[in-house]
Length: 534
Ligand code: 5FX
Image 1 (cartoon, rainbow, N blue to C red):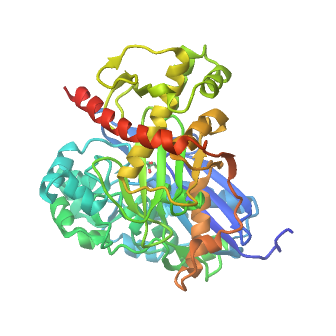
Image 2: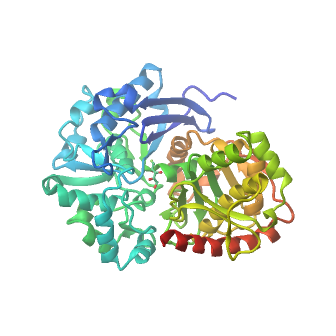
Image 3: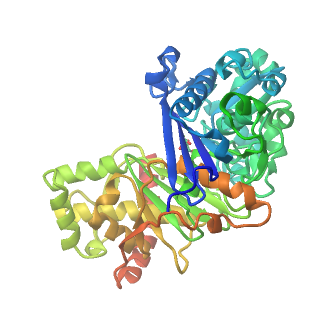
């Protein structure tokens, strides 16, 4: 049944790298409006490519903060022109690309508090930032600062135990340190540092918004267990950081109502709540409605694995973040560079470029591949940091130089999924009754690949369309934020969302075959890693 024309709506924004997107849902979780602004093509005056500026050193990557501000003006104007009724919005939330940082100039909070609804935000906030080009997640120019932070924290593993990750160049703490060292004046004139997510929330709130626990976990500064800033990390990173960052808050908090600027300029209701914004990956976890025991495997150019975990076990690879929908839980994120491109290379070399032939090879070869196993790192892998193709047959003592095309096809797919499972388990993932594997991305349309995924994880595989998961997750979080304080669980609020489709169930022999292979894979991976280092 169609919702009444005055029934409540919930908005989810996503300030991602290349565009700003919005989704509106009704109380039954139906999507009723979608809109977007592409940075490169719709805001060409900022001269970005893919939403960023790549600097001459090849390492520094930034985005203009006023481009994000202007994109919001443009997006809200587009919605208004499309006849979107802002008055029906009961709550809004959003997400941002993770790790990026915004530097508000001294005095900016007064400007935010008194925004004149006759002008756009771009005009009003011209002088509000002490740094015009913000470091973003693609930046890798802070290696020295990473080393220094790890040394101050007592080593890489100790830092991972505190903050959920060893030091990463793109993580905000290291970016702030670099900025404070290279541009001390700009730092001195800064009264507040936001993440992209909390910066966006601040615009709606007309005041500085808190950083939420989940996106805050991508900074190398938050103690993910106490959910407070780590004193050791703050002290090592830069002066006055506790004042500049403000206190972090649970990801489900209501920050306040939308500022009078939006009420008067766009017709929002005065009682429209702003729910804490978070990072795009945490918001996607909410959009996919990932639950305890679930694992999401995104099979794209690179493969990303998200998981819901109860007990974090931070390691030297991957990231553990506070969970965005349930405050006692955690999520983990792993990135594997050799994903689709490697599968395609093997398809081209062993199956004449045909997915049908590739799939037939998977059907015609046995689970476990008669003991053949491979590591296919065409480019330097992130997890683990190793490179090259390494094949082993039943006899582990030495590598073999080639195998038949059919064996090669099964070896690449099994090898990739064994790796996803081994590394997920190292971060605290465990298969429990009811565990689901949610597959998304290009390769998730190939049934035979998904059958191998199901067998290796010994769990049913479901597919889910993820195109707007961060936006949708933000709209779900807006809805949940209104009732979270009274103890209502996120999953009760999103019960009506479309269910993922079951596409594969594990073979009865899968557990026996792959439990052995997982151990062997981990052992051989150590060897490959050592060989890559020498
Ligand atoms: C996660 O750690 C990342 O750096 C990226 O996925 C960004 O969040 C992309 F926006």
